[in-house]
Length: 251
Image 1: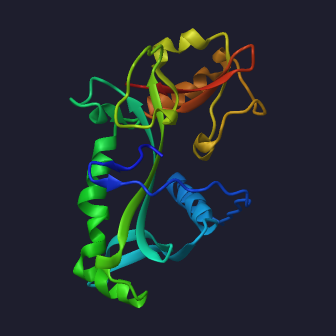
Image 2: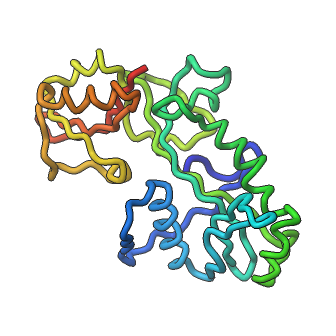
């Protein structure tokens, strides 16, 4: 998890106990990465002791229009809980914002950590207490005043290449997964082998059993992403078979 306890008034759910139960999820259509992560978290929750899932993706409507959604309603030790689930990728850029939290931005600079915190605090969690939500909660024999609210906020973090002795406050540094570089500096990895995984595989731990390409062979594919102002996450492997995650940015 990206932090433990309380941050800006948001409480992380206590760490989940890992489960050995296999995760199987199939769908006929392509799903977004965030939805896949939600399914993984639900799978974990289903195997937690004293935990019962009440409902998932609860639509809240006003005049037949959806005004929001509660990710998950559950009970832990018989206490009702509203849980919002988040999975993000953030890069540390000191040129953005004035505080340590403001420096974490999305790979394509379209979102940020503080923006997501604000959305959770101002929109997603308050939805529980809206009058439109009360009737839906009643159908599950629940009342908002009795429900605890948590977030399950996970992230992969990337720091500038060759960052040394940098201290990162407020966040769990175990979430730092790799580095990011501008394309013009990717030449520093030209002696290594490259692989660009699909978006769903951004969740995976890198491994050697993929079709690796030389730095020269990857240039067309890499440029295609960057020309569209999309920052790909790459796996880069050295001669010792040590693999690191490298995000190549266009900005």
